[in-house]
Length: 147
Image 1 (cartoon, rainbow, N blue to C red):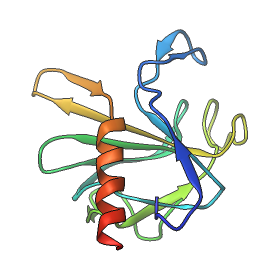
Image 2 (cartoon, rainbow, N blue to C red; image 1 turned 90 degrees about the vertical axis):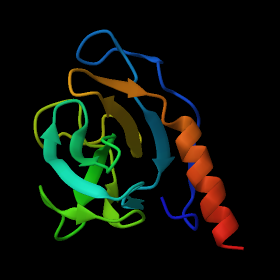
Image 3 (cartoon, rainbow, N blue to C red; image 1 turned 180 degrees about the vertical axis):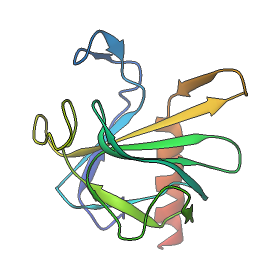
């Protein structure tokens, strides 16, 4: 999220989740107001876009290191973003919302936020890992660049 917007987050990777069955949280939630722009964390290609019952309106971007970046609970997508789009780090891909936890179009079952997840893939298995350290590193770098 752009630094000039009010947002907050903490490490929530591995926390329990209950909707749709017992599972762990595979990401970090960044809380912000509706329609705060969501920027891509990496260069890559849009691999997935659309509705997911858990994540609502979501975008999945695969980067050059084969890491899948998952952006969920969006309120909408940036115009022109579609499957196969080439994305640059920092490019706006969508807007913060509260979509998900139900059939297409379900909104408002929780406060607006971005669920951000990162997944590695070795060609056989894909697994999530904690994105919090990367988020903090990117945030520090962005603040330093703005000085």
